[in-house]
Image 1 (tube, one colour):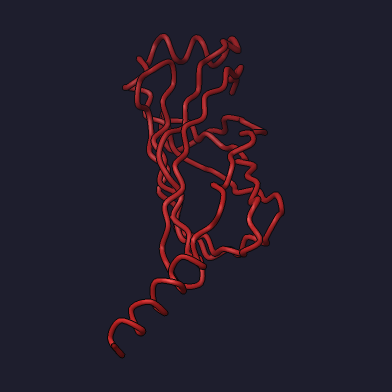
Image 2: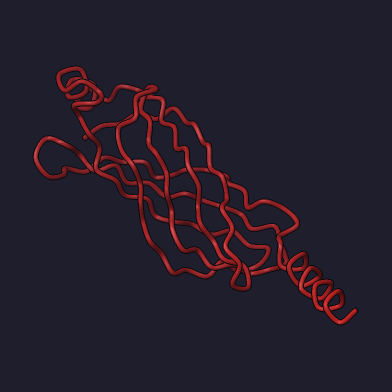
Length: 149
């Protein structure tokens, strides 16, 4: 009997820690290219999220693949220790070095200097903890942007 009561208490505590709604990626803004090491430029952007829950969370990591025109060109793998307030909007900076050989060097350089429009896709997840319990928030965001160095 005592065992069942302990398991019931643990189950109630676990259910109470789970967020009712998913954190929402509202937009990726301020997308810009900066010169990087060698030929490969650095893609910088701000990801704007909204936490609709009444529970605050802690961000542990961002793990996203970056696709330009359908080709995987980079991976965002950032470790963080930020607190997300309940029922609030928050912004995370994203910074990643692109691989020009994946896009095609000559085509990419001509497009980047000319300001060509590209289809940017961020796909992956964000790792957060809620009262000590880990949770993964899926991210799949696509936006057409004009990139220029």
